[in-house]
Length: 449
Image 1 (tube, rainbow, N blue to C red):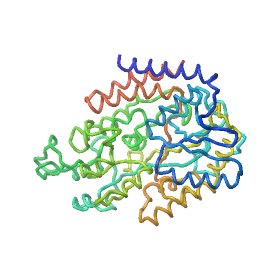
Image 2 (image 1 turned 180 degrees about the vertical axis):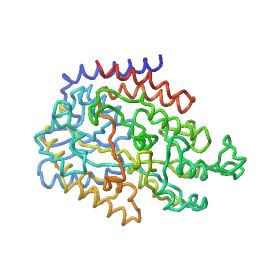
Image 3 (image 1 turned 90 degrees about the vertical axis):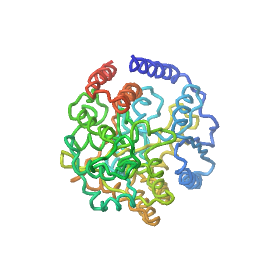
Image 4 (image 1 turned 60 degrees about the vertical axis):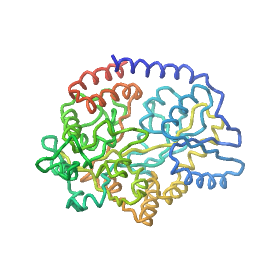
């Protein structure tokens, strides 16, 4: 009942948006013939894009870029509301997780006339933004992968070297050397480690692995590295799949093992996670967890912890014989009813250019989509004394690593509405993973409409 109710709400919201998207032509709030409005959510990236805006304005006299930065949750709420009210920005930072829904609701402007060349960007980034209708709706912006962050003092005290952490493997039967390492890094209130006799899993002082919640339907920084390295894929096709595979036995066995780490006391429990105030990085910063899977966008955050030195390791080797990480790529999109559409496309073209991407890379905050932009970022991180090999190696080494994208399908909001409570129920309440059979059927029924 709860799942069904959430789905109805999501569908109702989507229907309302689709009904008004065709008539909400009021234009972008604050935009005009000489101004392009641009929204992004990452405050850390704001200075870099302000620098890009100055470069763009020098090349385009008479055009001004007005940038608005909003926090993640507010960003999507206000963006959706702006589509309905007709106050949408001319250009916004788009996320592949949202792309399917936006494309379906026809609130994006095709960018075919920009002449985006797939080969100019890291492999796969440009292709992800092609709609089912054959039109392009996003210009590649940046990319990220996932790695294992760790507290150097805690790992050294536990006798685990950087080489040990970069050589971990796992399997869904006994967890392999990865689970052994996480168990050994776990310490209860009496000083007993997770792999020692007498360990008290009910009173843990330091968890071997931080929690990032249930993972919803993608598990980017939770279980996705394990399910992918076990050979599982989200849907029947790489892009625009028509059926999801959450009923797959490999997926369910992996998820059961992953959340089982919390039952054993090795991973922080569901109650320790809060999307606003207690994410994985917060747990590591507070000394409550020794390691955490997190994305490249968090590199500077972990490096900036006071009194804690952190390192990064590649994801564990899986049953397929490969390591795996999601490779997400953001893009810049133009809204369908942008007031300054011509200026907006010029701005997006500049954002996707080497000139802007090298500027962004020089700030050492994210990895831009072009190879030269990526090189600039690596150099900037190195100058700060930060080794980012664990994030760049999976992109360069296709022999030993598998990279994969968010699932790109229609009805993305409805998939989330069903998978969010389902995964929380498994993690928080110990619900059987077999319940995902029903959830998967509900999702595929929606996609079949």
